[in-house]
Length: 316
Image (cartoon, rainbow, N blue to C red):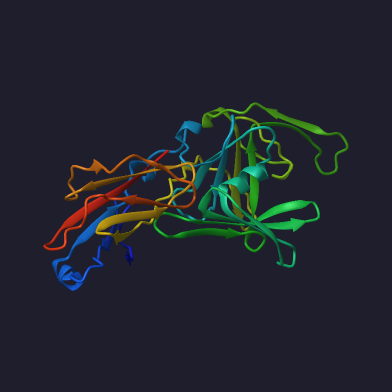
């Protein structure tokens, strides 16, 4: 069995073409290499294209973490001159949950350290492109860094307390809090709403670990560069993660594999040329965070030149 390395040929948002040479394990491999038996894996599902307009409601959010009857939204804004300025993910849950629960559920990896930088723990969430760093203080956990790798491979990252800090904003909730220097508690009681236009952002008077989520709540982290507060921009939906597939030939049959993400469905299509028509190769496969494998039951012929094109569709 020959595993074929995949190379990006076109990084445009509209079409990401991944070329792979399917090398036969048979004795005629050298002959077939000259004949260029090739395949294209085209990972360009419409659902992965960057949205052309900001999110108007929860219905526009593409990437969700968790499950349950309640829904909330998480907005991240790096204030790094990148475009779009802010991205939004969704979170579902039953029972009780905090703003910090939502952030850790969305982040693909979470690293917790003490004030000296020594590790205290880690856990894993839904979106592997997003990495969260937390620091343990006496009063609780605080966000120190948020790193995001976008579809083009660029990094968006900001670290806390060096050149600014991550300011925490909220929309919708019901809780009591006591301002610094005040004896009497205040009440924040704002209904949640899935519609973005229905609320206003407030710099949270409590930390994310103490903030109880309600159905329809919105949370945002906006990096305050130079320790100057930055208002939250209306976000764009975080795009669905694209798979990075590779090809093998097993018993003369192409096997197309890619790492999946939980909560998404994957389906293989094939064509004899890029113009199509594109025909489905079997049903869809639900992602579970592990590798999924599609098998083209049409064998690769042992002589002559042959071209095949494959497309993996990603949907919810």
